[in-house]
Image 1 (cartoon, rainbow, N blue to C red):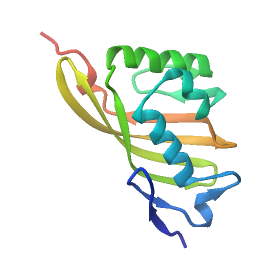
Image 2: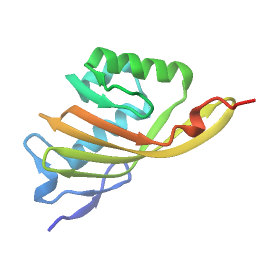
Image 3: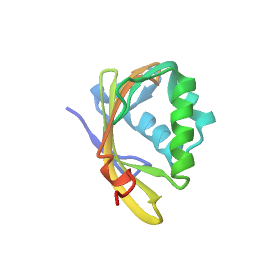
Length: 145
């Protein structure tokens, strides 16, 4: 049976036997992920991501491969949305796969915006080696004439 416990992120977490892994658990990973996205800095991505990460990103026909390319993606995103922040709203760990549901906030074309999404991440030694990010990108695209 899984125990549901609040974490420092404020989200509920399944932390039973399925939620614990060698050296990390669902709450630990979610707290590290939350800390990163509360003050995102591409230079700190190595604290979450494996150097050979493969990341599937909405709207991109090919995955982002490698930590350097992932850093470039985050840097470009922060250049466009400097006040981007993500907050964990739910998380779980099933074997080596972590799921994080999140709410993002940023200024988009001069207006405050918020949207939700989810990441499904395969972990090795507590680092993301493969991730699929899902969110509706419509609100982030420029308005058409």
